[in-house]
Length: 102
Image 1 (tube, rainbow, N blue to C red):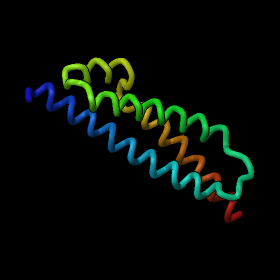
Image 2 (image 1 turned 90 degrees about the horizontal axis):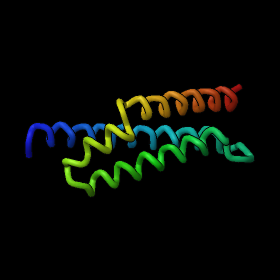
Image 3 (image 1 turned 60 degrees about the vertical axis):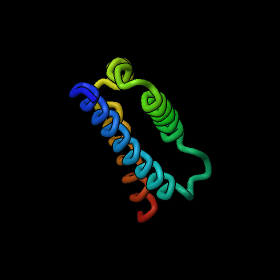
């Protein structure tokens, strides 16, 4: 594998680790909001975004390494999307935990 392919593989692995973190945050957010009668529209929207990104990652895994860079540039940019989702989820969790203890 070339240096470029190695770097791309590392980038994909990094995105996969962020996906795992996002999944952990979703789990925690669901637990914190178990008493809610209706689903939180914000969480529903974030889950939709997460699914789109996870699908793209899965597709990239099945593609040749040469196509990963193009897909990553088109759909991911820097890790900003993952970071934004994580920040919002952390705020949701914090608010829910405050309501549960308050």
